Amino acid sequence: MSSPQQIRDLANSMAQATIGSPNAVSTSPTATSYMGSYRPRSYSTTKPTKALRPFSTGDIKILLLENVNQTAINIFNQQGYQVEFHKTSLPDEELIEKIKDVHVIGIRSKTRLTENILKHAKNLVVIGCFCIGTNQVDLEFAAKSGIAVFNSPFSNSRSVAELVIAEIITLSRQVGDRSMEMHNGVWNKVSAKCWEIRGKTLGIIGYGHIGAQLSVLAEAFGMTVIYYDVLMIMSLGTAKQVSTLDELLSKADFVTLHVPETPETKNMFSTPQFAAMKNGAYLINASRGTVVDIPALVDALKIGKLGGAALDVYPQEPRKNGEFFNDDLNTWTTELTSLKNVILTPHIGGSTEEAQSAIGVEVATAVTSYVNEGSSIGAVNFPEVTLRGLDLDNADSVRVLYIHKNVPGVLKTVNDILSSYNIEKQFSDSRGDVAYLMADISGVDSSDIEKLYEHLEQTPYKIVTRLLY
Image 1 (cartoon, rainbow, N blue to C red):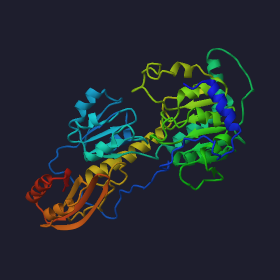
Image 2: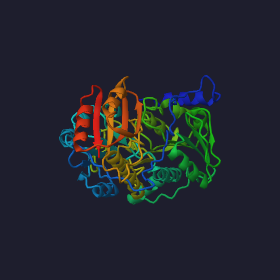
Image 3: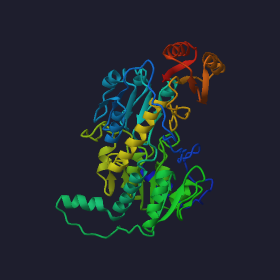
Image 4: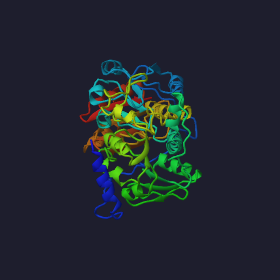
C-alpha cells in the first residue's frame, strides 16, 4: 500500500510540473480506443424467408444463469427452445455438469466461463453475455472451439450515465453521510465542503457510448466537460478532448472512469494519478474493478487529497446476492467502508428495468439469429459473417455453416465437396486462427444433406460443422 507521504510528495512534484512535460506522470493505455466498433444489428428482411432447422441436432437446449431478464426467456420460448433458468450463478462443479449438454448458455458478469469449464461443453454453439463486458469468458478458447460469443455493449449506457450523475451530486453534497447520520438519529445540518455541481469541471476518461451520454447530461447541469481517450473522438455539445491524462487530472473537479478491463488499464489509477488530481477532487469508477488501485485510493482519502469517491465495481465481487462483502473477499474492505463520503454500490450501474429488458432483447435476438440462421454479426470473438435468408420456395436448399482453422487450402477442400451442387451464395471471413464459411446449396434432398455433413466432418481442419435446412 502506498504511504500518505508518497502521495503528498507526488502531489507536490506534480503541482510544479508543466502539463505534458517529461516529468508528468501517466500510465494511460495506448493501444485501443474505448469507443470500440459499433455495427448496428439488423435481423429483418424485405420478403418472407424460410425457417431453418438444424440437421443432426435435437431440441435446442438453453441454460440461463444470473437472473437473465424475462424478455430473453420470452424470445427463446417463442422459438420452441428448451430453457433452464437459474437466478444465480452456479458453482464450477455444477456448471460443468450442466454445460455438457446445452447448445446455448446465457450469463451476466459473475459466471466465469474458463477453458476448464468450456472444454466440457461438447454441444455448445453460442454464449450470450447479457451485459457489456465479456472478460468473464475465455474468448480465445471459445473461438477455437467454434463457440461464438455475443454481448450488449450499449443497451445499459443511459443507466450507467444516470447513476454517475447521481453520484456526482451525492458526493458534492455529502448526501450519503447525512443520510447515514439521520438513520442513526443524528441531525447534522452543515454546508461546509458541500458544493453545487454547476460550474464545476467533469473529467471523463474513456469517451465511448457511456462517456458521451454522461457528457451531455453533465452539460445540462451546467458542468464544464473535458475528456481523455486514446483516439481522437468527436465531442458532443461543448465538451473538449485533452491530449494527456495528466492534463485532465489537473483540471477536473470530478473524474469518472469508463474504460475496459485490459492489461493496460489494470491499476491505471494508483498513487501517481491521485497525486496529479486537484486537492479535494472526487473519483468515480463504474467501469471495471481492476482499474483502480483501491489501497492507494484509501490512502488518498485518508489524508484528504480527495474529497470523496464512488465505486460500483471491485476486483473481487460476491457471486450472488446475500453473500458478504468483507475482508475475506478483498483485504482492504474494512478500511474502505470506514471512510466518510465514499459511496459503495454493488455493481448496479446497468441494473435498471429498462436496461435489462433491452439487453435481454438484444442478446437473445443475436443468439437466436446465430442458432437459426448462422449470422455472426456482432460476435465479439468470431469472424462476422451473414447471408440473406433463403426464400420460402427454396425447399431443396441447405445452409452450410463451416467453422475451421484458418490455414491454406481449406476452402478448396470444402468447395470440392460442395461442387456437385448448385452454390447459390457463399461468404467467408477469418479472425485470427479461426475462419467461418457460410454457403447456401440448392438441389439437395435428405440423403444429400447427410452425405454433405459426413464429408465436411471428415475434413482435417474442421472445428464445427452445422447444416440448416
